[in-house]
Amino acid sequence: MSTTIVTARREFDDSFTIERALATGAYEGLKKALAMTPEAVCAEVDAASLLGRGGAGFPAGRKWSMLRKNPTTYLVINGDESEPATFKDHYLIERDPHQLVEGVIIAAYALQVTQAFIFIRGEFALGLERVTQAINEAYAHGALGRNIFGSGFSLDLVVHPGAGAYICGEETALLESLEGKRGFPRIKPPFFPAAIGLYGEPTVVNNVETVSNLPWIVSNGGAAFAALGEGRSTGTRLFALSGDVERPGVFEVEMVKSTFRDLIERPELGGGVRGGKAVKAIIPGGVSAPWFFPEDLDTPLGQDEVAAKNSMLGSGSIVVMDETRCMVRAAWRITKFFSRESCGQCTPCREGSGWLERVLYRLEHGGGRMEDVDLLLDLCDNIAPGLTWPPQQTTICVLGPSIPSSIHSAISRFREEFIAHVHDGGCRHGR
Amino acid sequence: MSHFSPALRAKAEATVALYPKKRSALIPLCHLAQGQDGYLTEAAMVEIAELCEVTAAEVRGTATFYDMLHTDPVGKYVVGICTNIACMLAGGDDLLEHAEQRLGCAVGGTTTDGLFTLEETECLADCDIAPCVQVNHRFVRTTTPEALDALLDELAAGGRADEIPSHGTLIRVERTVGLQVPKDVIAEERAAAAAAQAARMEGSK
Image (cartoon, rainbow over all chains, first blue to last red):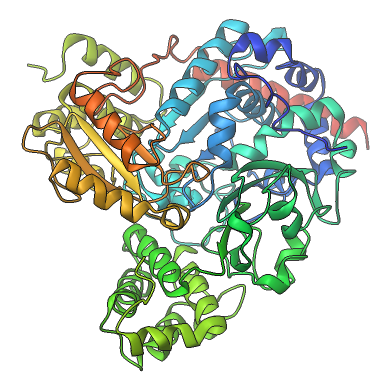
């Protein structure tokens, strides 16, 4: 028996409409929340031990409790979903915008913020239209605006389109972008926008999936949420599975109770590696995460469980690469991504990513040198000294120290493949 | 003399009014301008600067950071093909190469008839239907060369205009209401809530 929380409306093709949403209990959680005190809503979220679903996995309740007392405070929802192979927020934004809007209003009430924004990456044209529509409908329904459902609580919510920049998923870069500037991450400290955020005012930034859980948590109670999962990883989580599997897609799975192998192989989930091939490597939590190998497949899908194996569950996106795949090419493509998306503020990231990309390019396409493998590791060591996990940081944000993950993983495990590329004058598999 | 049409100017002013500070509307206004002109023109940047109370250089300096904002003309249809990891595994590079040959222009280029601009994109977050293709930021889900060709033919013949507006038009659903709650009302409500909470804390001691 599997519990669905954020994908409960999955069976309905019209799940994004207000008619379907209302017929299936939308805004009931909000009504219940508004009848509670704000601190009681916070207490439910604390009891749920909801970990942030954006990537860092910081407890949402603790983040909320850090909001500095101030006459003006903001709530900003991070829907910039750009970590390669992550497509769960895309699902929630397009398929269940009312659940998202309801979650935002509940969070805004619990936090008593002055105004709320939903930042959605610009490439989600349909998602932006659906959330805009949902917000219009929520106002008309009395769930937004003045005196929401007669509670005496008022709120305005604005959807804000991004314009194409991975770095804006970093919360301080997102706030810069929302202020109408380049997406440059801010220098830390302060480490949390809860102290100094949008326009310098205290701000909570929460991920789309995180707040989409709130209607269920309020309706069913934090304890019911915490009863799912195990240890620190409570509730369910959306996993975005892609690459060499028979059934790529977004799956809602109870935390910790299933393993990576279950997710990849079970017929109702990934359906096995495509063509019955063997797994060569998997990326367990977005391309910023160190890779897993066949012996790691029985690791449970939980935050601490993955961290114990020196990687991260991150954004919950899992890429499967089968036994025929070229690891040099995979590392090159991921590094090319970081090189294109580096904002350019910090030298190790800006220069390092481009240098690494060029060395990997020549290994893959011919022209690689025997010393290149050690050169790659040396460059990685300059971006994230010691190549530890979690990484040491030499840059303003974590984009920089994420760059070495794939390169270090690939070389540590498949050094001979890199050497063969030098001998062969490029990749013997072509593409 | 406004570069924006009267309707767009009204929409731009309504957008500015949604934010606590005008500059926050800068990127949304760039999208609106692209909707009118297809790309971000010099005149539009000057007008956005005036609306957001910054300089035109600040508008350009911000816009050029973002992949979706084009300060040079692009085709009526911007075709983006992803080659990032999940799409690479699904043959994104081959599909991109096919598109180059089919359109007769290199990545980053525009066809001579001004109809199509081809881009190699980073992850577009639709990795279960790979390789991912977008036209004007709409997911078209043409994962094979044949399906892509058929779509390009259809677009060239003027088809699918309802589904895929010309480049620049991003959000076709208009916000029906402005901000509904004046700042002073919010301030009063929040102060009253804080006082009530303090009283509850006192009472529970």
